[in-house]
Image (cartoon, rainbow, N blue to C red; front, top):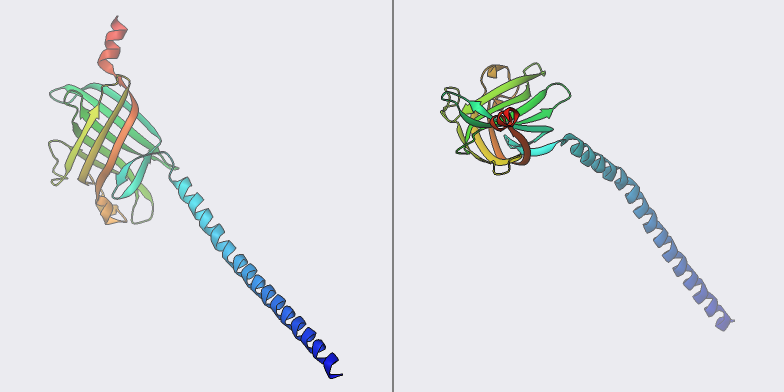
Length: 214
């Protein structure tokens, strides 16, 4: 009897061990499944945030304004006689269409020396009441009373008769007026950095007039 009883105990022990292992695996699997279910909503939220960020960055990147990306939805160029004394000037305009209103950056280059001579910017910022209004900034190579510390560097390439490319770096442009209305006082002064453009179509008024006469 004693000999027959020992194998039964061994079988029982083995079965108990196997059952314990199965229970342990099942418990681990349930924990992993629970953790996955808990982590899933976080991953979905992150994905939605990434998609939303891409929707905000519409248009073609042009530069950073006070460290924030600025993109345009339309670009155009023209060469005409401007200023006193009148000189050939290449004016490149970038516009950004918004849900309400628009923003723009306009760069004026001497079409003979190819140097940047004027920068004009229109941006939409919030006032103290939380409403957007248009803010005007302007700087030329002669300097302005509003921007005594303003600096400006840039060149344009007009070697292609149909498309222009160029660069610009403009800093410390003070708002022209109504700066006291800004919700964020830091927007009273703007800096344009990392500004490069290429393949912007332009027209030369003098050449068009000559072609028309012929």
